[in-house]
Length: 408
Length: 166
Image 1 (cartoon, rainbow over the protein chains, first blue to last red):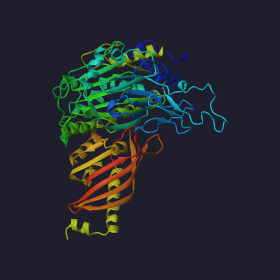
Image 2 (cartoon, each protein chain N blue to C red):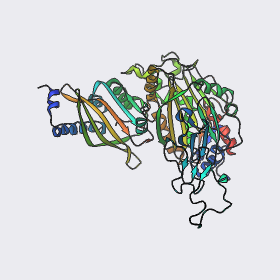
Image 3 (tube, each protein chain N blue to C red):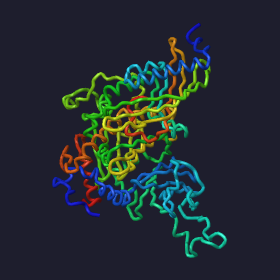
Image 4 (cartoon, rainbow over the protein chains, first blue to last red):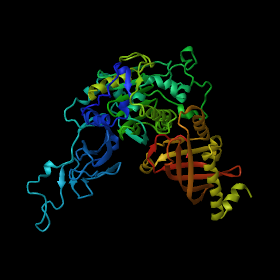
């Protein structure tokens, strides 16, 4: 696949992001092939969603439907949600339990590993018809994906040949990951799903961008949950594809440094302060937003924990699937705290409403102007870890890796 | 006869009529964006939740929107007016199939269907959200008010963002 001549990356490199990458169909197809079906580990499930043998979850990698299922021996398999016969998406429920998968169309049946175990009328009926004698079910199972689990989280890949998950994350991202996934058993608190009319990369840009948070999010700013003048840092792995935005709570007062933050409303008080009653739970940092290439955001905003999974729906839309969770050893008070703080996030979050709306505004602006480009120069033109949040470094790192993978 | 006793003595038909009026006033308040009046439909110690049906049916506690007191409702209104950034929109809510399940220890249990239509400036009107209200009402200061209002929605995939109450 080639990229048309007029679609050239600007000469400034990653300090510019050309707008054609958000709307172009060829680019989208290439992303599916090289990123989502390429040598990457995509998030698919929490093990807590599949506690028993036969439990399954229906999800997608990029736009490709897959099923995650716990096998009889307790291991986890991921297979394409596409019958090997005629391509029917055989699994239609979000979650459930089965002893085997059966396609409703012609009742081809698969075991929990995806092996084909039944083909009706394979030998014909009254010596008529049937599959050719050399038809071997072993060659017609569901396509199986590569699977890796770490501390209760399941990742899968269409690629058979890729790094171990821990090497794929790299040491700095693995340390952030293990803060939340420290081996304790997880408890799913619930789901939220939203369809955001924007290109999927805009979601990553948003979560890799600490610069906007102290400006756009009046709510967050007003309660001192995230401000440009509080201690913070950004971290990346050595490829630049993963990133972490890290901050910890600072003193809340109006200073010269935040005079630029027009959104700061002093004397802003909640009528019900129970919403923001965080307790220190994890070492050092109060907020860590980790973005893992190519489809996951791990949210630790004080005590609200969530996986945000990106499912692409064409160049102009993606589904953001939120799975909020806690730990099985949480007491009722902690569970209630997580549920309350979940009001900040999700399709109706005090904070995240701003993001989903602004991502749509972005798509409305960049879509019709493919010939133009974004200026990505806050904090420099290259990328490296920083001890502040006035930077777009993590976005530049993402696009450095993106260009490498996409060969553009 | 106290207001509470009057409500309790109402026949099924008259009670339904009272509820029709209450729900019409409720959606009228929201459709006309008089959000500051919205918390007044609730008692002080109330519970208001918007919950995806998949969570509700699986017994998962997460709500998309959770308010545990009238103060919480007011905070949501402040967010709508002062802090949230969003595109202009109209929302219109339809309530039908109001069913009275009955009184239990001074609490009236009611169920109803709702549909919320959303109109954005450059887009055709669409069904934004649909589901069931599961409400518990009490009589306070001579009026029926919500002690609990659950909006359990079928439309799991929310089109972008849920900003106004249902």
